[in-house]
Image 1 (tube, helix red, strand yellow):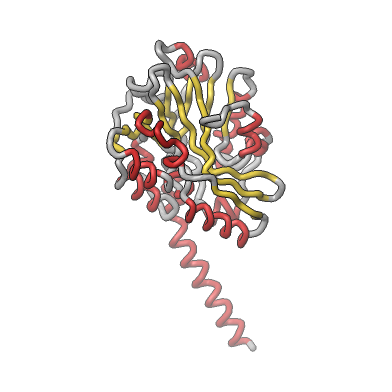
Image 2 (cartoon, rainbow, N blue to C red; image 1 turned 180 degrees about the horizontal axis):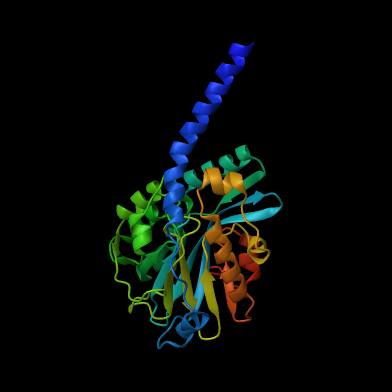
Length: 300
């Protein structure tokens, strides 16, 4: 019996050691990324630029019932008066969405899902208007749709991407990074420090966040009367943002190595901005909160 316990203890130690070897590098990588954040006024300045965007829409590629809430896989389209569109995130394809549904069912709490079409399929004849694209981060559920997009769109779309997102990858982002690198997107120039901009897309800004992944990025869209902040997966729901609730050890420590100190700082920062009547923080997967924001769905 004593020998049996020694064997079990030895196996447990080896598993723990292997897990530590696997997880420590991505944790250290994520911990190292804590860029300075811009002031509220710097964000608001996007609302007064000349020829800024006139509208923001969302595209829903898939949804799933999860513990009484509605999880969505979304892309967002920023529109200018000249017809130009900029796409934030690319959603999923049918196979990926189905696999995601089964994953959440297996973990527990995931219900039935529905697929509505890739972003490329849903944009149809409007694809040629998409002159730029970017990603809140490079997890596969945010990048997978770029394949079908490029198959139909072809070249001619600029990729706006921070250096952190381009250069820093781990086991959760390497597949998505590969899709983006091998896509039809060609990297565009960014100007600035805390708030990054590109002159082709006035009124659009990028902020390097870190926290969720090393390359997590906030996209800021300044309409004349409203500031939209696309926070990616800094939180899973808008309620978690407003209550400053983290994702728990299993998620942040094991499944997706997060810098939890940084994500808490970002939650508090975004929550303070969201208190303004003319600022809305959009959490990528919270479909009900997105719909309650009043943002129109593209084509409707």
